[in-house]
Amino acid sequence: MSDHCRVIHDILTLHAERRPDGEAAVEDDCRLSYGLLAARVDGLARALLAAGIRKGDRVATLAPPGLQFWETYLATVSVGAIWMGLNPRYQRTEYSFLLNDAAPKLVFVRAPYEGRDYRAELAAASATPPEFVTLGTAGEADPGLEAFRGRGAAISDERLAAERAGVAPEDIAVIVYTSGTTGRPKGAMLSHRAIVSAALTNRDWMGDGLESTVCPAPINHVGGLNNVCMNVFAYGGRIIFHHRVDLDELGRISARERPSYLVSSPTGFMMMLSSPGYMSGRGHSTRLIVFGGAATPEPVLARIVPLGARMHCVYGQTETCGIVTRTDDDASLEVMSATIGKPLPGAVIRIGRDDGTPCPAGETGEIQVKAPFVMSGYFNRPEATAEAFTPDGFLRTGDLGSLREDGNIRFVGRLKEMFKSGGYNVYPLEVEHAIAEHPKVQMSVVVPVPHELFQEVGHAFVLPVAGTSLTADELKAFLRERIANYKIPKTFSFESELPLLPNAKLDRQALKARVASRAAE
Image (tube, rainbow, N blue to C red; front, side, top):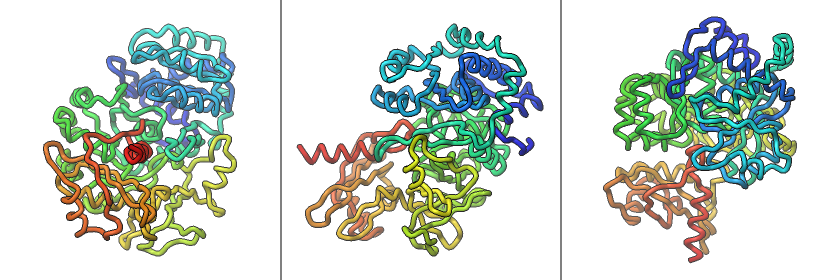
């Protein structure tokens, strides 16, 4: 495909012209070619214009991952409006903040869905209620959406073309809100330039592994939107949507559709490996696996190797449109476990000190990024935007890393997760990695707790391997041979499950609250 794509809609136009019969998107029994997808997006884009949506207006979608999400996203950004996703797992307080911060003019909403009347919830949560377009059950005739689509008949081809011609690469296409684990969420503004350059860059290094993927990921995170959907879309591949993470059903879908591309995480790997049905369903169709979000222990990666796919550890965040580093094609399991690889083409990454000077190899500092796929800033947050960038234009990721002699970057952890114990810096990720080396440990999370003598010490939440027993004394003895004594957690609790955020990352704030509540008892 030509690299002359300036905005997101250019990608759809090229595929629709060059391979109109190629499959673009699948959900249940509905299968759309690129030609049909383009026609449906055109119709919805006309309807948005007829509804008064103009360049820069916000349009939201509350729906599970599926064709309705994909069509509303592509139609919205094609006419210069700004799209944002809403997660059905959120509650009214969260909706209230997001709707009143972004103030969308129109909201597509699946209602009812899983027993909740989301249209009523969103209306009650909005200080100024937007226009709502109700989405019905996926795969069936949808009176609300089709009636809305019919409004577009009044918009001429010339008007649609003119609106699209006015969309520029630096225009904001999407607002993605951060998870808000350290305060109020901030809306990262991702431009057409950022999203397109990220997708094309990933397409170029990932290659033919992007032929098809299954997407059960929430629509309001860059993981699902960019790392999964946009990468496959840029390649011209097929996206198979499923409305939730149900491993048995995903295994059946994978056996039928034979997807080639998988985006995962340590949590995702653990879930996969605990589901024989899913693993057998993946079979050997998987050709490319990218994973990140946290360090993945070597023993876990070794159990994924039999799938026979190329594997890459990657790193990124909302503010970088997703992936910004990757491990080499021939990287060992040690490199994929211990590092996040090297910058993608077009990206410059440095490990910086507080004063902005670069750290030498081996020294821990902040991971700072300059790339065409970095966000434009935070919506309505000029002060936060200014704080997010260094004077010379590097994004401050808030993540800590160090450069190894082999050129790979070691991810140390979040700057805000580091704590001091007796004057020493403790990085929870390092401790978690050491704990994960124990053969009876499936996963762990370390959080700081107050201590009279040392100010703060670590408390470890440990998820043991099913069917095994483990004690705190056993783990402490194991850790004494691996990490300094001040890094060893003073207390341990053994859990049957660990809380997750909507993006499937571990919820450290919930665990900190759990420690605090237990201490108060």
